[in-house]
Image (cartoon, rainbow, N blue to C red; front, side, top):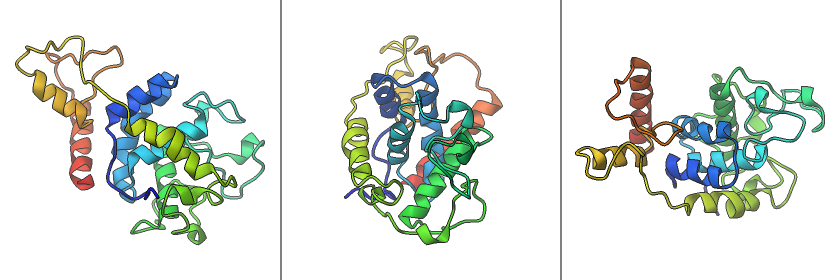
Length: 227
Protein backbone atom coordinates (compact mmCIF):
# COMPACT_ATOMS: atom_id res chain seq x y z
CA UNK A 1 0.00 0.00 0.00
CA UNK A 2 1.35 3.41 -0.99
CA UNK A 3 0.93 6.11 1.66
CA UNK A 4 -0.15 9.46 0.28
CA UNK A 5 1.64 11.37 3.02
CA UNK A 6 5.21 10.26 2.47
CA UNK A 7 8.62 11.41 1.36
CA UNK A 8 9.07 12.49 -2.23
CA UNK A 9 9.82 9.42 -4.34
CA UNK A 10 10.82 11.08 -7.60
CA UNK A 11 12.44 14.26 -8.84
CA UNK A 12 10.74 16.94 -10.84
CA UNK A 13 12.98 16.08 -13.80
CA UNK A 14 11.80 12.48 -13.68
CA UNK A 15 8.23 13.76 -13.72
CA UNK A 16 8.85 16.05 -16.67
CA UNK A 17 10.59 13.36 -18.70
CA UNK A 18 7.93 10.75 -17.87
CA UNK A 19 5.14 13.12 -18.88
CA UNK A 20 6.91 14.02 -22.11
CA UNK A 21 7.46 10.34 -22.93
CA UNK A 22 3.75 9.73 -22.43
CA UNK A 23 2.77 12.41 -24.93
CA UNK A 24 1.74 15.04 -22.40
CA UNK A 25 1.03 18.59 -23.46
CA UNK A 26 3.75 21.13 -22.75
CA UNK A 27 1.36 22.76 -20.30
CA UNK A 28 1.12 19.56 -18.26
CA UNK A 29 4.89 19.02 -18.37
CA UNK A 30 5.38 22.55 -17.06
CA UNK A 31 3.04 21.89 -14.11
CA UNK A 32 5.52 19.44 -12.55
CA UNK A 33 7.63 22.08 -10.76
CA UNK A 34 4.47 23.58 -9.26
CA UNK A 35 3.48 20.21 -7.79
CA UNK A 36 6.94 19.77 -6.32
CA UNK A 37 6.70 23.25 -4.78
CA UNK A 38 3.16 23.06 -3.42
CA UNK A 39 2.56 19.44 -2.35
CA UNK A 40 5.17 19.29 0.48
CA UNK A 41 3.62 22.44 2.00
CA UNK A 42 0.06 21.07 1.88
CA UNK A 43 -0.01 18.17 4.29
CA UNK A 44 3.49 16.95 3.38
CA UNK A 45 2.16 15.11 0.36
CA UNK A 46 4.39 13.14 -1.95
CA UNK A 47 4.22 15.35 -5.08
CA UNK A 48 4.81 12.36 -7.35
CA UNK A 49 1.48 10.90 -6.23
CA UNK A 50 -0.45 14.11 -6.85
CA UNK A 51 1.17 14.58 -10.26
CA UNK A 52 0.49 10.97 -11.23
CA UNK A 53 -3.17 11.36 -10.24
CA UNK A 54 -3.42 14.55 -12.27
CA UNK A 55 -2.01 12.69 -15.28
CA UNK A 56 -4.87 10.22 -14.99
CA UNK A 57 -7.53 12.86 -14.40
CA UNK A 58 -6.46 15.17 -17.24
CA UNK A 59 -5.14 12.59 -19.72
CA UNK A 60 -1.69 14.20 -19.45
CA UNK A 61 -3.15 17.63 -20.09
CA UNK A 62 -5.17 16.56 -23.13
CA UNK A 63 -8.41 16.60 -21.10
CA UNK A 64 -11.07 15.49 -23.60
CA UNK A 65 -13.99 15.54 -21.18
CA UNK A 66 -16.36 18.40 -20.38
CA UNK A 67 -13.61 20.70 -19.05
CA UNK A 68 -10.39 21.96 -20.60
CA UNK A 69 -7.21 23.64 -19.43
CA UNK A 70 -8.94 27.03 -19.05
CA UNK A 71 -10.51 25.66 -15.86
CA UNK A 72 -7.04 25.30 -14.29
CA UNK A 73 -8.53 22.23 -12.64
CA UNK A 74 -5.93 19.42 -12.57
CA UNK A 75 -8.01 16.74 -10.91
CA UNK A 76 -11.66 17.17 -11.89
CA UNK A 77 -12.82 18.86 -8.68
CA UNK A 78 -16.48 19.84 -8.72
CA UNK A 79 -18.10 22.87 -7.15
CA UNK A 80 -19.31 22.64 -3.55
CA UNK A 81 -22.82 21.59 -4.55
CA UNK A 82 -21.54 18.91 -6.91
CA UNK A 83 -23.42 17.93 -10.04
CA UNK A 84 -23.38 15.64 -13.02
CA UNK A 85 -20.06 14.48 -14.44
CA UNK A 86 -21.16 15.62 -17.89
CA UNK A 87 -22.10 19.12 -16.75
CA UNK A 88 -19.22 21.58 -17.28
CA UNK A 89 -20.83 24.02 -14.84
CA UNK A 90 -20.58 21.40 -12.10
CA UNK A 91 -16.78 21.60 -12.21
CA UNK A 92 -14.78 24.22 -10.38
CA UNK A 93 -12.95 26.94 -12.27
CA UNK A 94 -9.75 28.20 -10.64
CA UNK A 95 -8.00 31.52 -11.19
CA UNK A 96 -4.71 29.92 -12.24
CA UNK A 97 -2.75 26.68 -12.00
CA UNK A 98 -1.24 27.56 -8.64
CA UNK A 99 -4.71 27.84 -7.11
CA UNK A 100 -5.92 24.69 -8.89
CA UNK A 101 -2.95 22.59 -7.78
CA UNK A 102 -3.25 23.91 -4.22
CA UNK A 103 -6.91 22.84 -4.20
CA UNK A 104 -5.95 19.41 -5.56
CA UNK A 105 -3.27 18.93 -2.90
CA UNK A 106 -5.58 20.11 -0.12
CA UNK A 107 -8.31 17.70 -1.22
CA UNK A 108 -5.83 14.83 -1.37
CA UNK A 109 -4.30 15.76 1.99
CA UNK A 110 -7.77 15.84 3.54
CA UNK A 111 -8.49 12.32 2.31
CA UNK A 112 -5.11 11.22 3.66
CA UNK A 113 -5.84 12.68 7.11
CA UNK A 114 -2.92 15.12 7.10
CA UNK A 115 -2.11 17.07 10.25
CA UNK A 116 -3.87 20.44 10.37
CA UNK A 117 -6.71 19.31 8.12
CA UNK A 118 -9.36 20.30 7.36
CA UNK A 119 -8.03 23.83 6.97
CA UNK A 120 -9.77 27.16 6.48
CA UNK A 121 -7.33 28.73 4.03
CA UNK A 122 -8.02 26.45 1.11
CA UNK A 123 -9.32 26.95 -2.42
CA UNK A 124 -10.69 23.39 -2.34
CA UNK A 125 -14.45 23.80 -2.93
CA UNK A 126 -15.24 20.36 -1.48
CA UNK A 127 -13.22 20.50 1.72
CA UNK A 128 -15.72 18.47 3.71
CA UNK A 129 -14.86 17.23 7.21
CA UNK A 130 -16.48 13.85 6.60
CA UNK A 131 -13.79 12.79 4.11
CA UNK A 132 -10.95 13.38 6.58
CA UNK A 133 -8.73 10.30 6.72
CA UNK A 134 -10.91 8.15 4.47
CA UNK A 135 -8.01 7.30 2.13
CA UNK A 136 -4.58 7.23 3.72
CA UNK A 137 -3.16 5.26 0.81
CA UNK A 138 -3.43 5.68 -2.94
CA UNK A 139 -5.19 2.35 -3.23
CA UNK A 140 -7.89 3.51 -0.79
CA UNK A 141 -8.85 6.33 -3.17
CA UNK A 142 -10.81 3.63 -5.00
CA UNK A 143 -14.46 4.00 -4.10
CA UNK A 144 -13.72 7.27 -2.29
CA UNK A 145 -12.21 9.83 -4.65
CA UNK A 146 -13.74 7.95 -7.57
CA UNK A 147 -16.37 5.18 -7.68
CA UNK A 148 -14.11 2.81 -9.61
CA UNK A 149 -12.78 -0.03 -7.46
CA UNK A 150 -9.53 -0.03 -9.44
CA UNK A 151 -8.96 3.75 -9.46
CA UNK A 152 -6.19 3.84 -6.86
CA UNK A 153 -4.41 0.72 -8.07
CA UNK A 154 -4.46 2.12 -11.59
CA UNK A 155 -2.68 5.27 -10.40
CA UNK A 156 0.01 3.15 -8.72
CA UNK A 157 0.52 0.63 -11.53
CA UNK A 158 0.13 2.76 -14.63
CA UNK A 159 1.22 6.22 -13.51
CA UNK A 160 3.16 6.42 -10.24
CA UNK A 161 5.49 3.46 -10.64
CA UNK A 162 6.45 4.29 -14.24
CA UNK A 163 7.13 7.88 -13.12
CA UNK A 164 9.37 6.72 -10.27
CA UNK A 165 11.21 4.32 -12.57
CA UNK A 166 11.95 6.94 -15.21
CA UNK A 167 15.68 7.33 -15.68
CA UNK A 168 16.93 10.85 -16.11
CA UNK A 169 20.34 12.01 -17.20
CA UNK A 170 20.49 15.67 -16.36
CA UNK A 171 22.09 17.58 -19.19
CA UNK A 172 21.72 20.96 -20.82
CA UNK A 173 22.80 21.80 -24.37
CA UNK A 174 24.79 24.83 -23.17
CA UNK A 175 26.52 23.13 -20.21
CA UNK A 176 29.35 20.88 -21.45
CA UNK A 177 30.64 18.21 -19.08
CA UNK A 178 34.00 19.96 -18.72
CA UNK A 179 32.46 23.26 -17.63
CA UNK A 180 33.68 24.20 -14.14
CA UNK A 181 30.11 24.44 -12.80
CA UNK A 182 28.67 21.38 -14.57
CA UNK A 183 28.46 19.14 -11.48
CA UNK A 184 26.84 21.84 -9.34
CA UNK A 185 24.31 22.59 -12.10
CA UNK A 186 23.52 18.89 -12.36
CA UNK A 187 22.88 18.67 -8.61
CA UNK A 188 20.54 21.66 -8.39
CA UNK A 189 18.65 20.32 -11.42
CA UNK A 190 18.29 16.85 -9.87
CA UNK A 191 16.86 18.46 -6.73
CA UNK A 192 14.40 20.51 -8.80
CA UNK A 193 15.81 23.81 -7.56
CA UNK A 194 16.70 25.08 -11.05
CA UNK A 195 15.24 23.15 -13.96
CA UNK A 196 16.42 25.13 -16.96
CA UNK A 197 14.35 26.19 -19.93
CA UNK A 198 11.97 24.29 -22.18
CA UNK A 199 14.45 24.49 -25.08
CA UNK A 200 16.91 22.33 -23.14
CA UNK A 201 19.25 25.14 -22.10
CA UNK A 202 20.36 26.27 -18.65
CA UNK A 203 21.76 29.67 -19.68
CA UNK A 204 24.42 29.66 -16.94
CA UNK A 205 25.76 33.15 -17.64
CA UNK A 206 22.43 34.97 -17.69
CA UNK A 207 21.53 37.14 -14.66
CA UNK A 208 18.98 35.78 -12.18
CA UNK A 209 15.96 38.00 -11.65
CA UNK A 210 14.46 38.65 -8.22
CA UNK A 211 11.40 36.73 -9.36
CA UNK A 212 13.50 33.68 -10.24
CA UNK A 213 15.42 33.98 -6.97
CA UNK A 214 12.16 33.97 -5.03
CA UNK A 215 11.11 30.73 -6.74
CA UNK A 216 14.49 29.12 -5.96
CA UNK A 217 14.29 30.11 -2.29
CA UNK A 218 10.80 28.62 -1.94
CA UNK A 219 11.89 25.40 -3.66
CA UNK A 220 14.88 25.18 -1.31
CA UNK A 221 12.62 25.74 1.70
CA UNK A 222 10.26 23.00 0.49
CA UNK A 223 13.20 20.65 0.02
CA UNK A 224 14.31 21.16 3.63
CA UNK A 225 10.75 20.80 4.94
CA UNK A 226 10.26 17.62 2.91
CA UNK A 227 13.38 16.09 4.44
